[in-house]
Figure (cartoon, rainbow, N blue to C red):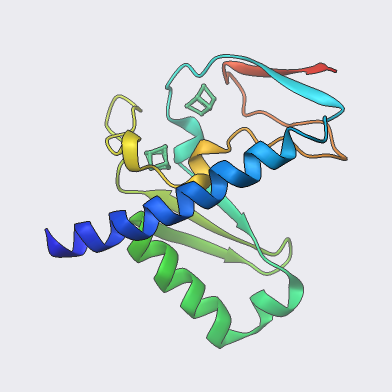
Length: 136
Ligand code: SF4
Ligand code: SF4
């Protein structure tokens, strides 16, 4: 209970930071717009990829700290470390059997920002995802 309270307090700060960042991004319009709606299929929760820089992934110390921190704070479970494409792949303890999120209110920024809208690339979607992209 106490640990949950600590995690949620940290998450509130992260969510506030994310809210400000997303607000600032709106000041600089993207080439693409996200359209459609989440079907709550849970496919994007099965394998969550978190990008790292080449030096971050090469450092045992930094990589292990990241894995421990993310696993603890988000309740994610490490699936693999991909050294070739430089990302950490996790799955999540909060995915319900019907695919719905059991931690919706306190889901981390990575979940709130999905699907990711990039300034330079057309957004990519998982097969069957309810979202799509439109040119701005
Ligand atoms: S894959 Fe798309 S439709 Fe399915 S849960 Fe994720 S965002 Fe929603
Ligand atoms: S916290 Fe919820 S939305 Fe995020 S990966 Fe886990 S189940 Fe999916």
